[in-house]
Image (cartoon, rainbow, N blue to C red):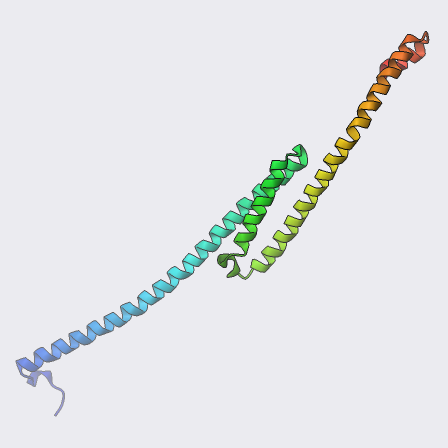
Length: 171
């Protein structure tokens, strides 16, 4: 006997229609579950990307703050600037060691560049510190030399030699 729905009774037709609707609903449920899993995976990828972008933005801001702090220390010799440089370097190191940065393939290269920058900043800080210490050590000698020069000029001006007096005034 061939499949001919016209020969079915009303009851059979209702059962067949119900079974067809049930199969269609199961198919839609399976399809929606598959799509929901794809959306969840996309959301997870976007979340990881957003965390990496936030880490990158924080790293960029920390690097800019570090650059300004070390330059401020080099110019003004302000200890607070060197302290700020070191604090930002620690924060950036923690961010680079975090899970968001570890997932990125370029993380190792970024860590190497940051390490070199940090070492250069520390070296500059040490050099400026030595410069400031040397400058402080030379200050008494410079003051003594200035006093000796003033005394010498005063003595030369008391002499009756106009050539020496003119040279002393230029000094």
